[in-house]
Image 1 (cartoon, one colour):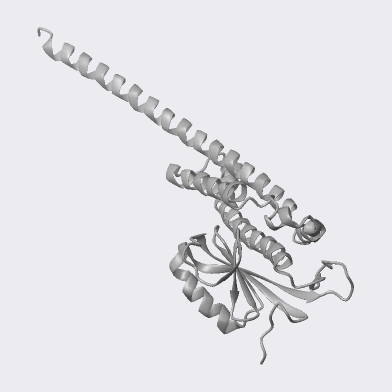
Image 2 (cartoon, one colour; image 1 turned 90 degrees about the vertical axis):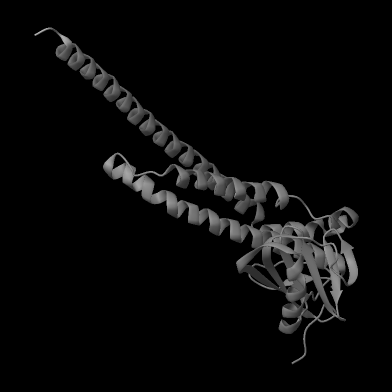
Length: 267
């Protein structure tokens, strides 16, 4: 079976998040771009590597993808046990306009590197968002039993270390969204090719990048507020127990004092 490549009328793009970070230094190949790093694979394929842990492989066969990922592994830190993946089909348009029909192939005027880099940027951001959305959903699953127990019993068995982990997970996801990945920032390719702004805007709308970031930030805010509230409840409970212990110690000391006075008084 013949593999597809950027010179064909129809190619596949495969975005894969392999880890938390990829060091691009030392990755060999014919360089098409440096930010992000894009290299040619054999004759027709392109691999776009993003420092925040994503590789977008365009026009590669399954074997070529496996070979590239094996070579890439030594440059990956924070490797994932399970890859996050997203795919798309890119097609040469029948007319002279880039189009992104809902649910259909991404249609481009030409399989130029700049257009492929623009598509790769959106796919990479989308696959990162998918992982962060899943992680936030997992945090909500942990919070829900606490909230349900508070609602039904008026109290909950809370673990401070567990709550701190919730806050830490929320901060990590927030850092990825607003920091290293910079979901809402436009790709560098658009600085040299402003004519691709419309293509990027259509891709951004199709993959709902801004809407997903906004929804994610709202959920992160809820998680942070909930975790802070639970931590305050834990602190209140600990303070109450400490006060009870102090009262008990004072009472015990008073009893000892009375006992000593009683035993030492002349019979």
